[in-house]
Each structure stands twice: as C-alpha cells, then as structure tokens.
View 1 (cartoon, rainbow, N blue to C red):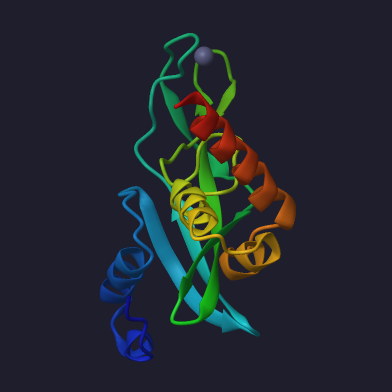
View 2 (view 1 turned 180 degrees about the vertical axis):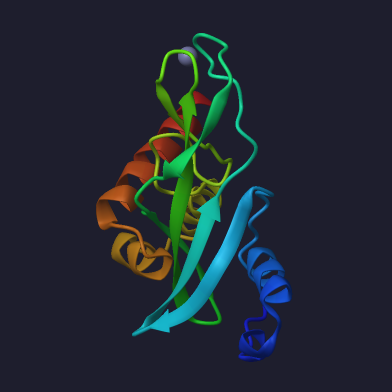
Length: 160
Ligand SMILES: [Zn+2]
C-alpha cells in the first residue's frame, strides 16, 4: 500500500479517487472531500450521498434533506498513519409521511462504527497471536472492541 505526499499535488478528483483506492473503499456513493494530517493521524473528510430512494415503510418518494452530523470511522493504517474517516451521511425525508431515513453504505453496517475491513484485520491479527492492546493500537480501535472480536472469533471456531 503506497501513500505518498504526491497525493496532495493531485487534482481533487484524482486525489479523491486515489484515497478511496488506497483505503480500499469500494463504496461508489462515498465522495472524499478533503484529506489532512492531524497530529499523529490522518483524517479523511467524506460524504455519503445518492439519488433519493423510496421510503421503505410507506413506499413514498423521499427528497434530499440535509446531511447528518459526521460519524467517525476508524480505518486502517496508511504508511504508518492511522486514518480516521469523518463521514457525513445524507438524510432523506419522505414526501408522504415526513419520516426521515439515512443514506446507507456497505462501508459501515447500520449502527456500527467499525468497517468490515477493520474487523477482518482484527481477526487476522488474532490469528497471528498479536496482543490485544497492540491490535487496538495498530487499528485505532478500543481494546474492548478487540476483545469483543476475539470472543466472536472463538465462538466461530467452537462452532466448526
Ligand atoms: Zn413515508
């Protein structure tokens, strides 16, 4: 994985495209707005948006509303830097019942702030017998998250 400073000199579209590639983000509805160094880590500012869908419950057409307050998603290391994604999700409002719904992405499961790829890395490190605080540190997640993963992982092993 390369993460060179040349990134900064690229045009915005190219830069956005490169960052999504570097981070392995395969979510077409996510647009990278900015990318900056913040102390010991890097931050990616992104938004999640797509054409207004139908509201699931009443099937009414929704319209674009505002963006939700950003959620912080810890992400993988990129050339030694922990990378945090600050993602703002589009809110849609149903034109019939007025209920709100939030844009969804496969990057993060609903009500879940740890992307699947980070879960995968935790499992991988657990196999390699990396200590829990070291896993938490290297993946920028809490120790309790790493421990919870370990339990889920052991549960899967018990089942096989
Ligand atoms: Zn509705």
